[in-house]
Structures are given as C-alpha cells and as structure tokens.
Image (tube, rainbow, N blue to C red):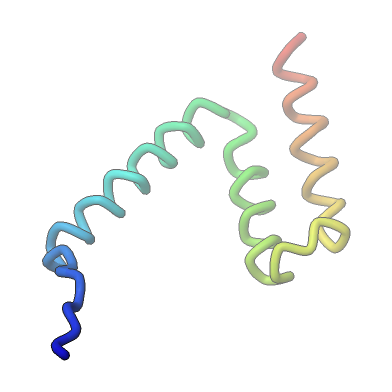
Length: 72
C-alpha cells in the first residue's frame, strides 16, 4: 500500500508567508511609538525565559506604565 505524503509549499513561498507575518508584526510594534523598545524587551525576556511571564514582570510593568503615559 502506497502512502501519500502531503505536498508541502516550496521553501520560497513559506519564507514569503513568514516574512509577511513579520512585516505585520513590525508595523504593529511601530504603532507603539515610544513604547516599542519596551515591547521588544518584553518579547526578548519571554523568549529567554521560555514564555515565563512571572520572570518578566519588570518588563511587563515598564510597558504598562509607558502605555498609560501615552493615553494621557
């Protein structure tokens, strides 16, 4: 019995799809204006801590404070 393996997208199409997602993320981060660097710091912390929010509370609180300042 022959097994059929699903056809995967060519690597170039996968890369362009992921690049599009990354570009969207970049645009969303840019909209944070002065808080964007804090957001990126939080993302770095989450990656380093295996998505452990408790260990990134300093970054969470800094981003929260920045967003509250922006709203005023």
